[in-house]
Image (cartoon, rainbow, N blue to C red; front, top):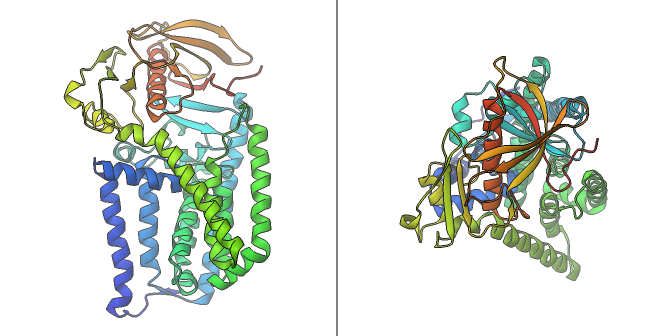
Length: 482
């Protein structure tokens, strides 16, 4: 049974209300078109592994509701049922998501090491075995304005891929896991409320574990450590038991998980030098927060090493993914905007000189993190003016047309490639535009331009009636081997 607790004294209620107020202010700042909001969004994106407003706002909303739930009184039996509900929800949601992902790759002949873009009606969803978005199809019934306003893929392109019962099961697993985690809040507050760092870690791990039922799947790099952390918070009644577990057994479990998952990641990766730094983030944070239980010189050495890693990782990541958007528009910058017909119009950007680059994206009517029509680059931009892809056609309109070029893009090669796949090469036809396939794609600007060009390839295909298909770009380590 769950029943409302007696009204507590004002100081007891003040803390969760203050936390909720700060969360609301953070959400408002993220939604503002300011440098501070962009920087906060970047920082929080490291915790949810997504640059979309929707994922970040879910973390903040989940945390706010969690603080409020900590004020209710729950009987011991109900606390146990909440733990069962949490475990059952995670098992159901992730089980069905994985059960959908593996057949999806096998049915369409997609290598387990590859990532693809599933297109339908002009929208797409990225998906891969190690970061599957198939679960997002369960969010397709949500209002479309959520996707537009909060820049979040709600699975519209994948809505017809999975049967209704599977989508319903994934959604049910998500709701059950969220409900179980939130109903554990009174018990968690009793045991951990005096440890702010562990409170933060609980909310991050719980939000990641539940959100990733839709976005990521069981094999996404943040999910195994998040589930491990969440399980220990539920199993250990207080912070002393939690620290004792991690000191005695937990570190071996975490090490085994890290080695096992790292081996799987490297085995499936076909890149020459796998980039494994990103999925280490949450594991390193977990270890860092364990160190208050450690004593002596080794504890301080471990803290210093972990903090150095985190600061170094944040510095390198911000140089590639944040600072280019915050840097000032200068004489070396260029900009162009694609119109609905696919013609690129160069923009005179002198009026924006000295302003942040992200302001230029906004002024030209696009999202700085996930643009669809705006190209911004610094000349000269190295790379290839053509891009090779493999396409698996799923549906074609009855009024089939020809694969005619757009004003900025043409198809320079097409040939069958194995069962049901077609190899294509797209070539830029407009002078003075950045490459379709940038070398390295290290900067957020070059990566943004690459995504914008993908929308131009879709425009060319849709004009010929190719309404639904799977696109596999031939980037490093992402080529079909027939």
